[in-house]
Image 1 (cartoon, rainbow, N blue to C red):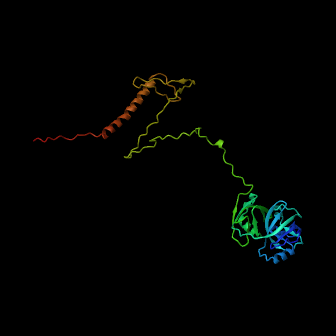
Image 2: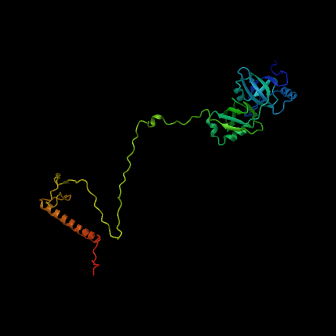
Image 3: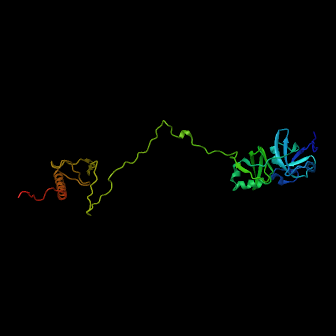
Length: 315
């Protein structure tokens, strides 16, 4: 087995390198994509094997059995060295100077990818799909299980790749790929109302009393234009009168014709029963006068049958 820049032979490209982050070569733009920087000898070997563009590679960390995929940006690294984005080294669980095995790969064009942001802040961006589309232009492939980094507005957002179709690793170069989002990792569902607050089946819920319907509560009008007589509201209870000495006085009994007690006016004291009888007689006369015109009206309105003259058929 060849090691550190020596080729393993055969018709495929496979080589091991020591990996370092992009900060070691002063290439900050390397963090915005999934491309690596390889030594010039790798280009010679790839050209000899007639590896076609775009050149895609499979990365192996044999110590942790982690696998990922990447593209290549330049061939300017020192021999036996490969420079990678730092987020890619985190996915591969690689440290500075660890050994990584690089192998050329052919990936199918992707048709579907499902992403899951780590935080809900990414969804607060005005147009997250447009930002993601711009970022993925710097990527050449995606692998299920990886976490990519999206930089926007001086902030870094990490996104997990949950699912890819038609394979677990796909190429996204010059292809139309459907993108779907899963809820963020820190997403919390709204709290549902507790069951204890809900009324149980056995317990009866008290209903508010419904207002009762009271018919004929409006005012009436006559068809002949005369004013209608309004009935005085019926009184259910009689209030006792209070005298000047502060004691409660009972109403005096009326005459034998009146048949009931008569209420005295408040604020006046009446001595003797004669006043009561006189007031009761006055009220009876007023009531009789009111009844007389009513009776005459009823008699006028009443229909009388067979009031005409009689004629006999006999001569």
